[in-house]
Amino acid sequence: MVFLDMKKNIFLYVFSMIVIIVVVTIYHNFLINENFLSGVTSKNLIVVNNYNTPKEKLFKAISDIEKYPMILPNNVKSIEIIERIEYESGIIVTKVKAKLVAKGILQEMAIEHVIIPNERIELIVLDGDARHTKIVIEFNEIDGKTRIAASAELILRGILEPFIHPAEQVLKADMIRIMNEFNFYAKNNL
Image (cartoon, rainbow, N blue to C red; front, side, top):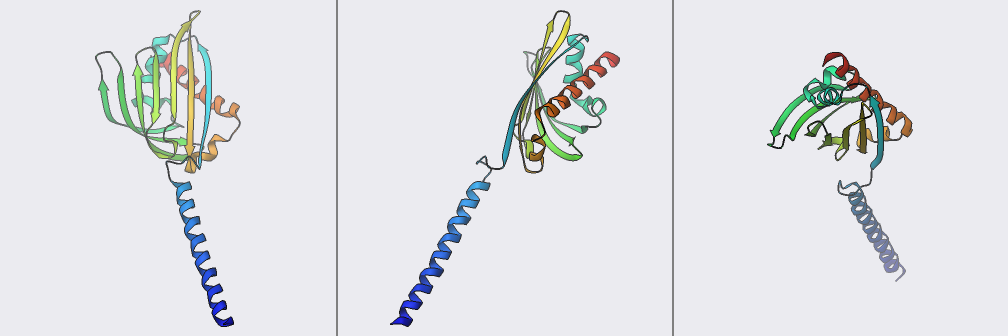
Protein backbone atom coordinates (compact mmCIF):
# COMPACT_ATOMS: atom_id res chain seq x y z
CA MET A 1 0.00 0.00 0.00
CA VAL A 2 2.83 2.39 0.87
CA PHE A 3 4.45 1.51 -2.46
CA LEU A 4 1.25 2.49 -4.35
CA ASP A 5 1.01 5.77 -2.43
CA MET A 6 4.63 6.51 -3.33
CA LYS A 7 3.97 5.79 -7.03
CA LYS A 8 0.86 7.98 -6.86
CA ASN A 9 2.87 10.83 -5.29
CA ILE A 10 5.62 10.51 -7.92
CA PHE A 11 3.01 10.48 -10.69
CA LEU A 12 1.30 13.59 -9.23
CA TYR A 13 4.67 15.32 -8.88
CA VAL A 14 5.70 14.57 -12.49
CA PHE A 15 2.24 15.48 -13.79
CA SER A 16 2.26 18.80 -11.89
CA MET A 17 5.77 19.60 -13.23
CA ILE A 18 4.58 18.95 -16.80
CA VAL A 19 1.55 21.21 -16.25
CA ILE A 20 3.81 23.96 -14.84
CA ILE A 21 6.21 23.66 -17.81
CA VAL A 22 3.32 23.84 -20.29
CA VAL A 23 1.77 26.87 -18.53
CA VAL A 24 5.14 28.67 -18.34
CA THR A 25 5.79 27.94 -22.05
CA ILE A 26 2.37 29.26 -23.08
CA TYR A 27 2.83 32.36 -20.90
CA HIS A 28 6.34 32.96 -22.33
CA ASN A 29 5.06 32.62 -25.91
CA PHE A 30 2.29 35.09 -25.11
CA LEU A 31 4.80 37.62 -23.78
CA ILE A 32 7.08 37.44 -26.82
CA ASN A 33 4.24 37.58 -29.33
CA GLU A 34 4.82 40.73 -31.44
CA ASN A 35 1.23 41.85 -30.88
CA PHE A 36 1.93 42.11 -27.18
CA LEU A 37 3.95 45.20 -26.30
CA SER A 38 6.45 43.45 -24.01
CA GLY A 39 9.98 44.40 -25.02
CA VAL A 40 8.87 47.56 -26.81
CA THR A 41 9.86 50.97 -25.53
CA SER A 42 8.44 54.27 -26.71
CA LYS A 43 9.19 57.94 -26.22
CA ASN A 44 7.63 61.12 -27.61
CA LEU A 45 9.87 64.07 -28.46
CA ILE A 46 9.21 67.52 -29.86
CA VAL A 47 11.89 69.87 -31.17
CA VAL A 48 11.25 73.34 -32.56
CA ASN A 49 13.93 75.44 -34.22
CA ASN A 50 13.97 78.65 -36.27
CA TYR A 51 16.17 79.20 -39.34
CA ASN A 52 16.99 82.18 -41.57
CA THR A 53 16.84 79.91 -44.62
CA PRO A 54 13.69 80.33 -46.75
CA LYS A 55 10.97 77.78 -46.05
CA GLU A 56 10.92 76.49 -49.64
CA LYS A 57 14.67 75.73 -49.56
CA LEU A 58 14.47 73.90 -46.24
CA PHE A 59 11.45 71.96 -47.39
CA LYS A 60 13.19 71.01 -50.63
CA ALA A 61 16.28 69.78 -48.75
CA ILE A 62 14.32 67.65 -46.29
CA SER A 63 11.90 66.28 -48.89
CA ASP A 64 14.68 65.23 -51.32
CA ILE A 65 14.92 61.68 -50.01
CA GLU A 66 17.50 60.51 -52.56
CA LYS A 67 20.00 63.07 -51.22
CA TYR A 68 19.82 61.89 -47.59
CA PRO A 69 23.06 59.83 -47.86
CA MET A 70 24.90 62.94 -49.10
CA ILE A 71 23.32 65.35 -46.58
CA LEU A 72 23.50 62.97 -43.59
CA PRO A 73 26.47 60.67 -44.39
CA ASN A 74 26.97 59.64 -40.76
CA ASN A 75 23.35 58.52 -40.39
CA VAL A 76 22.06 57.44 -43.82
CA LYS A 77 24.18 54.99 -45.79
CA SER A 78 21.77 54.34 -48.66
CA ILE A 79 18.24 54.96 -49.91
CA GLU A 80 16.46 52.78 -52.46
CA ILE A 81 13.12 54.02 -53.78
CA ILE A 82 10.63 51.14 -53.80
CA GLU A 83 7.49 53.02 -54.82
CA ARG A 84 6.49 56.64 -55.45
CA ILE A 85 2.93 57.86 -55.94
CA GLU A 86 2.21 61.50 -56.83
CA TYR A 87 -1.38 62.59 -56.32
CA GLU A 88 -3.14 65.43 -58.15
CA SER A 89 -3.32 67.31 -54.85
CA GLY A 90 0.48 67.49 -54.86
CA ILE A 91 0.90 64.98 -52.03
CA ILE A 92 3.71 62.52 -52.69
CA VAL A 93 3.94 59.14 -50.96
CA THR A 94 7.28 57.40 -51.30
CA LYS A 95 8.30 54.03 -49.85
CA VAL A 96 12.03 53.44 -49.49
CA LYS A 97 14.46 50.86 -48.17
CA ALA A 98 16.97 52.75 -46.06
CA LYS A 99 20.25 51.69 -44.48
CA LEU A 100 20.61 53.84 -41.37
CA VAL A 101 23.29 54.05 -38.69
CA ALA A 102 22.40 54.78 -35.05
CA LYS A 103 25.25 54.86 -32.54
CA GLY A 104 27.37 52.67 -34.82
CA ILE A 105 24.69 50.03 -35.49
CA LEU A 106 23.57 49.61 -39.11
CA GLN A 107 19.85 48.96 -39.56
CA GLU A 108 17.93 48.37 -42.78
CA MET A 109 14.29 49.36 -42.74
CA ALA A 110 11.36 50.28 -44.96
CA ILE A 111 10.11 53.83 -44.47
CA GLU A 112 7.10 55.59 -45.93
CA HIS A 113 7.48 59.33 -46.60
CA VAL A 114 4.30 61.37 -46.98
CA ILE A 115 5.12 64.80 -48.39
CA ILE A 116 2.58 67.63 -48.31
CA PRO A 117 4.40 70.31 -50.34
CA ASN A 118 5.87 73.21 -48.33
CA GLU A 119 3.85 72.26 -45.23
CA ARG A 120 4.60 68.86 -43.75
CA ILE A 121 6.60 65.66 -44.08
CA GLU A 122 5.67 62.44 -42.28
CA LEU A 123 8.02 59.48 -41.99
CA ILE A 124 6.64 56.15 -40.80
CA VAL A 125 8.89 53.14 -40.25
CA LEU A 126 7.18 50.09 -41.74
CA ASP A 127 9.37 47.24 -40.50
CA GLY A 128 12.32 46.27 -38.35
CA ASP A 129 13.16 47.14 -34.76
CA ALA A 130 11.76 50.68 -35.14
CA ARG A 131 8.45 49.58 -36.73
CA HIS A 132 5.60 52.08 -36.14
CA THR A 133 7.97 54.94 -35.29
CA LYS A 134 6.56 58.16 -36.72
CA ILE A 135 8.26 61.49 -37.30
CA VAL A 136 6.28 64.56 -38.36
CA ILE A 137 8.08 67.68 -39.58
CA GLU A 138 6.03 70.86 -39.99
CA PHE A 139 7.22 74.03 -41.74
CA ASN A 140 5.94 77.54 -40.93
CA GLU A 141 7.09 81.09 -41.57
CA ILE A 142 7.17 83.26 -38.47
CA ASP A 143 8.67 86.76 -38.36
CA GLY A 144 10.62 86.22 -41.57
CA LYS A 145 12.14 82.96 -40.35
CA THR A 146 11.36 79.36 -41.08
CA ARG A 147 10.15 77.44 -38.06
CA ILE A 148 10.58 73.69 -38.19
CA ALA A 149 8.67 71.70 -35.59
CA ALA A 150 9.65 68.04 -35.52
CA SER A 151 7.74 65.59 -33.37
CA ALA A 152 8.83 62.00 -33.03
CA GLU A 153 7.02 59.05 -31.57
CA LEU A 154 9.90 56.62 -31.21
CA ILE A 155 8.92 52.98 -30.83
CA LEU A 156 11.95 50.74 -30.48
CA ARG A 157 12.43 47.05 -29.83
CA GLY A 158 15.18 44.48 -30.22
CA ILE A 159 18.68 45.75 -30.85
CA LEU A 160 17.48 49.39 -31.00
CA GLU A 161 15.60 49.38 -27.68
CA PRO A 162 18.60 50.54 -25.55
CA PHE A 163 18.93 53.70 -27.66
CA ILE A 164 15.66 55.11 -26.37
CA HIS A 165 16.99 55.31 -22.81
CA PRO A 166 19.57 58.11 -23.15
CA ALA A 167 18.47 61.33 -21.58
CA GLU A 168 15.74 63.09 -23.51
CA GLN A 169 18.06 66.07 -24.02
CA VAL A 170 20.58 63.86 -25.89
CA LEU A 171 17.89 62.59 -28.26
CA LYS A 172 16.61 66.13 -28.83
CA ALA A 173 20.17 67.32 -29.49
CA ASP A 174 20.51 64.61 -32.16
CA MET A 175 17.26 65.77 -33.80
CA ILE A 176 18.48 69.40 -33.78
CA ARG A 177 21.85 68.36 -35.23
CA ILE A 178 20.11 66.60 -38.11
CA MET A 179 17.84 69.61 -38.74
CA ASN A 180 20.92 71.86 -38.68
CA GLU A 181 22.64 69.64 -41.27
CA PHE A 182 19.61 69.96 -43.57
CA ASN A 183 19.67 73.73 -43.00
CA PHE A 184 23.38 73.92 -43.87
CA TYR A 185 22.77 71.95 -47.06
CA ALA A 186 19.77 74.13 -48.03
CA LYS A 187 21.65 77.41 -47.44
CA ASN A 188 24.76 76.33 -49.35
CA ASN A 189 23.40 74.14 -52.16
CA LEU A 190 19.90 75.28 -53.08
